[in-house]
Length: 173
Image 1 (cartoon, rainbow, N blue to C red):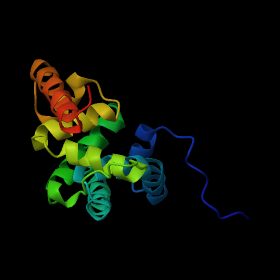
Image 2: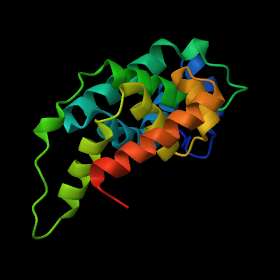
Image 3: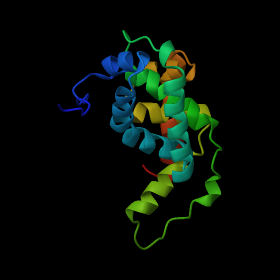
């Protein structure tokens, strides 16, 4: 008799959450494996620190477990998850922009480019940074705005200003 748990990777996120709500730990593990790499990258850009990103990632999935019964499985899972991650990232200590090294003039390497972008993101107001990063993750401006507590018109305006500030900070024309 085979006692191995069946693979749940073929299930949608919403179906997995219904199973999590029913107490299935394998469904929770499947969601964690599916989403943790993307969320970790998102939270790293959000916090500017690998350690803070890891802490926020763990806090995100603790909250998913703690609040799983509040999730409405008839609604898309991704916005709900990213809203939790955004809040967990917000709760993490804000990094100091000066902790990122200035660019080497001779040859920008990928690590420098990443650090320069993170530094540029941290010139933004925290709410604008969350808005911008949610759009980078594929949410439209209206949805991202709702996730950070803004109406669609305000979100589009603030997103436009955020892009301009990032370009200015990076001196990209």
